[in-house]
Amino acid sequence: MEKNKDMILVVEDEEIARKNLTHILEKGGYEVVAVENGSKAINLLRKKTFDLVITDLRMEKVDGLQVLYETKSLQPYTEVILITGFATIETSVAAMHNGAYYYIAKPYKIGEVRRIAREALLKRQLRLGEIDLKETAKKPPGIYGLVGQSSVMVEVQKTIQQIAPTDINVLILGESGTGKELAARSIHHLSNRCEHEFTAFNCGSFSEELMANELFGHEKDAFTGATKEKAGLIKITDRGTILLDEIGDMPLSMQVKLLRVIQEKEVLPVGGETPVPVDVRFIAATHRDLKEDVEQGVFRQDLFYRLNVITIKLPSLTMRDGDIPLLAYHFLSLKSQAMHKNVQDISREAMDLLCQYSWPGNIRELENIIERAVALANGKEITPDFLPEYLSSLSIHTYRQNDSDLPTLVEQEKKYIKWVLEKCQGNKTKAAKIMGINRVSLWRKINRLGI
Image 1 (cartoon, helix red, strand yellow):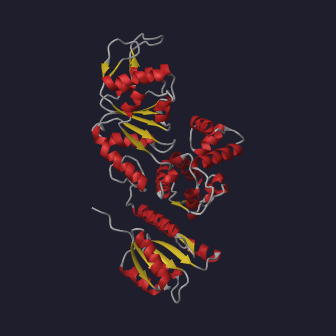
Image 2 (tube, helix red, strand yellow):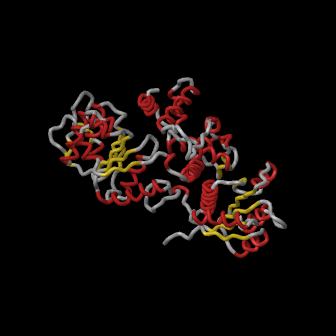
Image 3 (cartoon, one colour):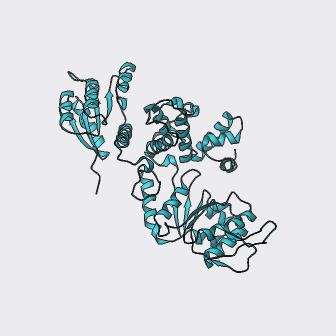
């Protein structure tokens, strides 16, 4: 059953402004009731429930602050946004202190109004418990842990739902920290193998000998110290799903052995003579361009085609318009529960910093920052004071359609990494931690970008 549209009450005494605001919100997919004064707004609030109130501040007789007070009295969980052409520090502080979600000065931008309305409505949803905070924004239902409502993530979720039951091999592409393992777990969770093991193995963390031993297992006395036989991860995962993370880092000789396993559906343990039959679904993941690696001869073409039956490309966080507040509240809930703290909110100013940041470390970096903020917070709200200093000290450039000489994403990433390294005095371990990525990933980016 389709969810009803969110209901927004607009209170604006200027007819043109009222019609414009109504049009902006209706185009955003909301149901809007618009009135021309505060008295009518309060009467409506006594009869009908609204999800959000957007009110002008300066109106005759009953002004926006009175609408705010009455809204919070009559409907405590309804969020209120104040709009005015007379922005002052005093009225702003008074409005926020008395429960306003945000305070926007005229002239405002269409995108700004829609974004803030969306975030205010999300906060209300979380308050009312309409979204399970442990599985925040689980859309469409059944997607394991993948939080996101942006168009690109909805497409990813649809693809996962379509391919999960088919048992075909999958290749997941994406930058470090974009959630490749979560996507793989989602596929397993929705597949016919969900009752059996899911195993994640990082191909970039082991030498060739250790990789063979971990994946294929060994027979007793196969090498010095092998006092008993050991089943490999592929055998242990029989009838389940195995994720080969960072598959692009697997040596060519191991690629040959893996190809045989996929083709013959059997594993030969180290030191063994008799292959062991296995029934495993393979999912591979990498941040690398495997097609380029095939052309350069560092990745086998036949293995690439075996793994790349279907490809899922995970977007970077900056490409997921609107998902940052959703993810931030998701992590806020998880970290607050884990630390046994009662941190419930993210201030408007803090959320603005999160939304403006470029996120080179993607979702993992956002999770680390929220975890840090929850640990430092001494009240119910995360404010900019609890966020890393570099979020507020970075200069933000707003790109317009008529901007010339626009930098590429690669140029922006290179500039950011150099900036962080300078702040950390060249300490790569510290810089990687700040970026929310591991040291190996930072080293690869440094080499790739020629820093």
